[in-house]
Amino acid sequence: MDKNTLVGAILIGAVVIGFSIYSRPSQEEMERAQHYQDSIETVVQQQEEQMLKAKQAEAAQVLQADSTSQFFAHTQGTEQFTTLENNVVQITLSNKGGRVSKAMLKEYNDQQKQPLVLFDGDDASLNIGFEGKNENILSSNLYFETTDVTDSTVTMRLNAANGGHLDFKYRLLPDSYMLDFTVQASGLQNFFSPAVKTMTIDWKQRARQMEKGYNFEQRYTSLTYKPVGDSFDYLSETKDEQASITEPLDWVAFKNQYFSCVFMAEKNFENATLDSKMEEKSSGYMKNYHAGMQTAFDPTGAQPSHFQFYFGPNHFKTLLASNDLSFKDKDQELEDLVYLGWPIIRLINRWFTINLFDWLSGLGLSMGVVILLMTIIVKILVLPTTWKSFISSAKMRALKPYVDKINEKYPKQEDALKKQQETMSLYSQYGVSPMGGCLPMLIQTPVFMALFFFVPNAIELRQQSFLWASDLSSYDDLIHWSTSIPLLGNHLSLFCLLFSATTVINQIIMMKQQDTGANPQMAAMKWMMYIMPVMFFFIFNEYASGLSYYYFISGLIGILTMWIMRRMTDEKKLLAQLEANKKAPSERKQSGLMAKLEALQKEQERLQKEREGRMNKKH
Image (cartoon, rainbow, N blue to C red; front, side):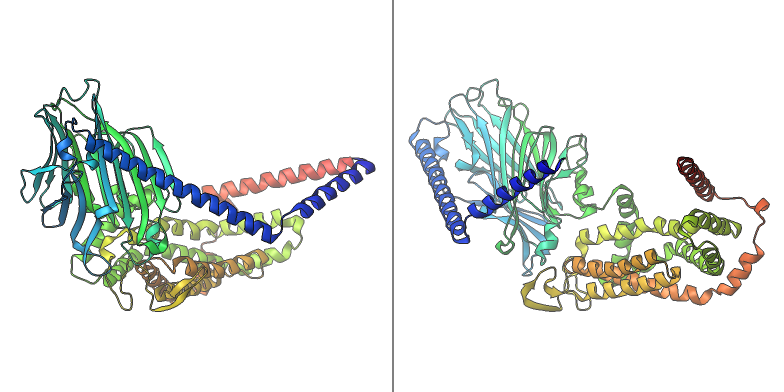
C-alpha cells in the first residue's frame, strides 16, 4: 500500500467514526426510544391477549349454541373429582377433560413438611383431540361421566347422541407410581372418517420448585424424552428451548431434580413439538413445559390406545422396576432419568456406588455416616494406586540431586534437547518413570468422579440432616444474609468452605511432594493450583452440601494418608535401593513409553541439526 492510499484510508476511517459519534443519539433520546418501543410491545401484547380471549369466548359460544353436536350434553357441567390411591401415591382425576388434575406422593414431603404434590389445578393440563367427519372433539372442553369407580380404577365416559361413547380408562397399579391410561371408542364408526388413524395430544405442566436451592435444582430440571430404539435426550436446563422431533418417541418426561411426570405411549408418539421455558426465580416454579404430539387411534374401537403415566421419584431402582410394569415389547429405560455420568462413570455408579450406598443405608445409619463410610471404602480401594503414585514421586525426589547436576551441565536454552535426553536416560537407568505418578491417579479418577455425579442425584439424601446441614441435597446456609452478592449469593456454605480449605492443604502437600524448585513454569502452575480451590468455593457454594461434605472428608483422608506415607518412607534408603538396582546401559530394558520418548527426542535433535545445517549453507 503506497503512502497516499494509506493516508486516504485513515481520513475515510476518521470521517466515518466522527460521523457515527456525531449522529449517535443522546442518553435521553435513547431512553425515550426504548420507552416508546416498550409501549408498542405492551399494546401488541394486550391486543393479542384480547384476541385470544375473544376467540375462546366465540368458540365456547358456538359450541353451546350447536345443539346438534353428538356430545352437546357434555359441554356443560360441574367439575367433580375422583381419587385413586395405593400405598405410595394418590391420584386425583377431574371429570372436566377426563384428566389427572393432581398427583401427590405419600412418602415424600415438600419444603413445608407436607405430602409432596407434583402438580395441582391449573399447574397441569391434558387436551386430547379427535377429528370427526362433521365436528372435532377436544377433551378439555367437555365434562365426562364417571363410571366403574374403585380405589384403583375409574372410567371417564363421553356419551354420544347416537348411542356410542368414548372412554378414558384409568388404572393405578398396586404399590407403584404407574398409572395405566386407555382411550377407546365404541359405536362411533359413523362419527369418524375411516381415514382417521391418529389423535392429537397437548400436554402442559408448570414444574414446581421442590427444593431449597433454585439454581442447583435448575441444573437437573429439564424436559426429557426418549426416541424409539435410542437413548434419552433433553432440552436445555438453563435457557428457553423448543424442538421439533421427527423421530418417534417412547416417552416424554417433565422432569425436576428428584421427581418426574412421564407420559408413555404403546404405539409411540409422532411429530412431537417440545417446548421448555424458564420461570422466574421467585415464582415458585422452575420450568413451563409443553409437549404437542400425535399417536395411534382406532376409531372402530377394535384396538384401544394404551398409555401409561409415571408420577414419582427419580430413584434409580424404582424407575428400573417400573420398566417391568410397562409395555411388554418395550424397554422404557426410565432409569436414565437419573443421570449417573458419562458411560464408564455410569457403569461404576450403577454396579458399585448404588449397591454400596443401598447396603450402608440399609444398616439404619444416618446419611452423613453413610457418605463417610463410602468415602473411606473408596479410599481403601484406590490405596494401591495412591501408594504407587506416591512412591513414583518419592523416587523422582530422590534423584533430584542428579537432575540438578544435569541442569547445571546444560544451562543454555539451545541445549534443552540434550538436557531432556540425558534426564530421561537417568530415569531409565534407575528404573524410574516420570509418568509413574500420573497413570495411577488417572485410574482412580473415574471412581472419584462417580460420586460427583451420584450424590446430587441421590434422592435418599433429600431432606436428610447431618451436623449443621439441614438438607444434604441442598446447600448448608448456616451463615446467610439478606442481599445477594455476585458470584456468592446470600449465604456461605460451611461444608464448601471446609472442602476448599482441605483442597488448598492438599495442593500444598502435592507441590512439596513434586519439589518443583526454581522452574518458572512450575511456579506459575503452583499459583494455578492455589487458585483452583478458590474457584471451587464459588462454584460449589450453591451445590448439595452432601457433595461438599464428601469432598471435604475425601480431602481429610488424603492429607492423613499422605502424612502416613511420608512417615513410612525414608528417601535416603530409597535412593540407596535405587543405586543398588541401577543398571548398566547394556542391561537396561526401556519401557515402551520411555523408548518412544527417547526416539522422539532423537528425531527432534536430528531435525534441529538439519535446520542448523541449512542455515549455515545460506550464510
